[in-house]
Structures are given as C-alpha cells and as structure tokens.
Length: 107
Length: 415
Image (cartoon, rainbow over all chains, first blue to last red; front, side):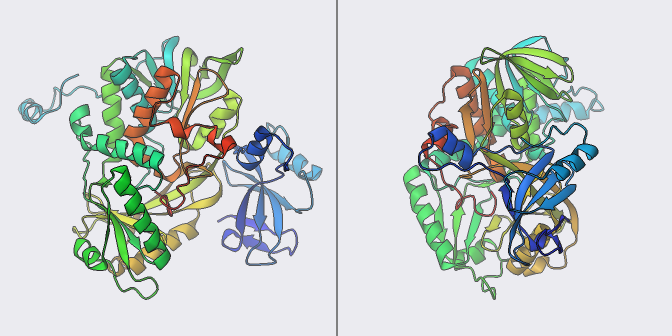
C-alpha cells in the first residue's frame, strides 16, 4: 500500500486517505496563449516510467494539497513537499540522484 | 500452414499428435522492413494482419519486448460489446464486434467467441436515463441494444439481487450480441495468420530508441540490433508515453493500473456478462467455471502491473452486494495491467509530429473488445498515410481543436 507523509500535518497517510491529483508543476496558460500551449497544459503529460512528480490531496485528513516525488516503475516514494512551490526542492532532487544515478533531474 | 479442422484433430489422433507444427515462426529480425510495429499484443498483431490482408503489405515486423500477448491482451476480462454513446466510438467498436463474430472462421483458429449477451445494470434514476439515451443513440447508429426491465434482468441472470438494499436494479442496457472471447487465442490466431503471410513476429526484442532523420522516422534501435523501416507504428498501450518520448513527442495519456481477479471454478451459474457501474464491478463466468471479475482503475501513474488492494476490496464488496451467492467464494488469482488513459476516455489512432510514425493507443480500460476494429482502422491509416472513416475522428489533433469524443459515461467504471 502506498504511504505518503503529509508535509502539513505530518501524518503518514495511506492511499485510501489521499486523492491523487496528477502531474505536478504544470505551467499554466491563460486566454492569450496559443492553441499548442493550451493543449500542452491541459492534456500532454510526461507520464514517465521512473521518477514522477505529482500532486496529492490529504482528503480524509487536513484536506490540503501537497506534492510528492515517487517512482512509477517501483512505487518507491522519495519524499513529499509543500504545494507552495513551482519546482521540487533541491535537497529532494539530490536525494533522488543518490538513489538513482541515471535520474537527469527535474525539467 | 496446415489448416486446423476436425479432420486434422482426427488424423493427429491416429498419429500420436506428432504432425502438429508451430503456430508461428520465430525469425531473427531482418535489417529493414517496410513497416515496423512495436507491440505484439492484440492491437499490434491485428494491425499487421490487416496490413497484409487488406493492403498486401507483408514486409512487416512486429516487435515485442516480452512475449506475444503477454501484456493487457492476456490481462483483461475478455468482454466484447459496442454499446457506446458517440457515433465514432459506436462505429469502430461495432466494426470490432462484427469482426469477432467471424474471427474463428477468418483466422482458422477457435477464439471461442461467445455472444452470450452483455448487461449493464441501471441502479440509479440518473444511470437509467443515461442508458435510455444510449439505447436510443445505438438505435440510430445501427447497434442493436435495448433497455430491459428488472423482470427481464431477473430472467436473464437469476443470481442478481434485484431488490438490493442500497441500489435496487431499475433496468439494464442489454446488448444481446455482446459477449466474451478467449483473449490469448485472439493474439495467437492473429500471430499465426500473420506468420503465414510472411510477417515476422519477433519476441523478446525491446525497442530502446527511435532513429529519426530530418523529421522522418528511419528505424529503431532494439535489444536485437538496429532495424530500418519506412513506417513505424507504436501500439504499446501502457508504455505509449515511453515510446512517444523516444520518438520526440508527448501524448495526452496517463498510465495507470487496472486490476482483475478470478474466483475458484464453480458450476455454471450465469451465462451473461453483467456490469454494475454504479457500485463499480463487473463479472462473467469463464468456460472453466471461474467468475471473472473486474473493477475500477487506480488514480495515480503506475507502471508496475500491480494495483492497490483497496480497489480489489471495493470491487468485491460491490459484487457481493449485487450477487450475494458469491460471498463465500475464494479468489484464485489477482493481477494488474497498465492501461493508457486519455482525457476523453477515447482512443488515439493518429499520425504524429514525426513523419512516418503512427500511434494507436489510449484504449484505456477497453482495449480487448476493440482489437479487430482497431487493427482494421490502423492498417488503413498506416497503409494510406491517412486515416480512413473509422479512424478519422480519433486523431491527436482533437485535443487541440476541442473535438472530444466523450465516453466517460459509456466507459463507466471501466470497459
């Protein structure tokens, strides 16, 4: 069972307590943007087999959204972090690189 | 290829079964092909078969990293139906269903197609109205379905708890010509027919890179060496995103786990397929007597072919409520497959930003039923470099243009 630690309330929550919210750090586009940009924002996903940054919500807990770094090929969880950011924190990237030398970093 | 027939069975019975030949060849890859298809699941093999049969293109290789039909083709719950809401879906799924009817004869192999009927229970007023709408749409599309009363549901499937405490059955959408087929046999039958036409099926050959030149596809790098090709078709379901990244573009797809399970075998107790989408579960009985059970997909990206246990619990709970007699059954096996979900729950059969590269993916939780139709339409797309009438609406550009084919209702919990 997938267990993520909520960075807000500190609870180690299993997945029945959480709601998945898909790929993290999507760049949002507004009314002035092109069709291609809008399509990419709304539909195109990295869908990586490997390290994946994603959004989760602690639905049956504090109710807050947060971020998680997880491996989609092993279900290993590297860590969770606040939703108030546009990119994963550097120390988490370092930690993932230690565990997975072929990880190219977040882009 | 020696034909399979009652006479062949009789003849081999007199010869200690020594005369059977291998169903398909296992050749080493040639340096170049006209068309390379990545993925020897049902969809890939069907595409290869119709390329050969309908267009005479047989200089084709089908590459498979694992074994033939070992992905979702061997992991689904074998349900075949075509009672979709939107016209493009009804067209391609009905084409598939009609091809299933004659598949055993066409491919000279028994795929055990059993048009036993598929019943989708309406258990809320909302769901009932939805299915009435689908039944009307199907009438216009020429797909034979009907909305039936609870009495008829009881007659067709006596083990259903019609007056359940939470969700009594208010009726059902009934497709008499839907049913099931032997999933492995479908892959094997296509593989045998392809091999017979001279198409190479190369197993344990993983594609590691897509070679490109001036925006055109040149070939692929594989674990068995470099293979050149003029056209490349990516038909890999859950791994579509991985292959697309190799080819240099992104897809509107997310890969998630979908699970299924079977019970211990019991005596025949239901001869239809029943789907209960409000409570999230569907069930049919295999020819071996096992109850074949499916439910909802997981919500998060996953490539491990393992799902979350709480979904199993949810599915089993739903089915015990719908079929109280199965409450003491032991479950025999449980497994997961990685399905490729699109935003509108409809597939993608399309050209791609890379010239000469085509994708067939996004079948999500409903791939098995569409295998022949998908292969038929994909062969047309690859051979003509333009989609035919079946594939036209399923292009990648629909996401940019906002022309969605919304099947989230017909797909229900899973399909």
